[in-house]
Length: 277
Image (cartoon, rainbow, N blue to C red):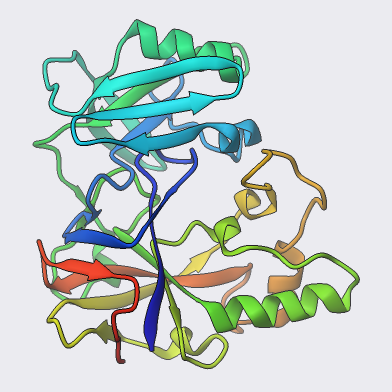
């Protein structure tokens, strides 16, 4: 197999950045889900609540993070800053210490996204000294942790699995979907459709190695067009994924695998790298 795509999502639920090469860390690809949008009580806000978040583009430069939207001047966030006031941010049931990027960022989010059920929006950064553990039940001794990702530091997907899903969608008269609907970090080719559901580890001759830990149950975000923030066909591709029964003993729609890093922290991964199970 080979790596065909690498993606990083610096701000949870905003647009991703396509990479040719990335540095691996225990918490994921460098800067992945290191920022997050929250409401007034610190609860995470995603495209599940505000699909228009998909319209906010993200860029990383050597010393700053830029957020861009067609209707506003860019928002600039310094990467090296760490003097912001702290608050408690919530991802699902996890409470994390976070740094508030301030009123300018909050006002920018309000201007491009509005509010969420009367609540303002804030941009927060994962505190450098914070540690958010991956659920222990699905680990195998690696003591993995992540930042603001839903639960795991890496999401791995297969081109063949997307092709099989698109074939089923087209059989219903629906348009095929791009891989960005599923927001993976690593995309591979060269395996049979949904073969990843039987993997336990995935590694490279360069020495980095992933533990394949849990099938990724998909949500409403997969119905959102990642270029427009609109939903053309409500319920799809979730309905078709459920019909495919890629996880016959689990209720729901599944696509891709959540993973942890077993070896290779600080090593580089690149498009074109050879991988084996």
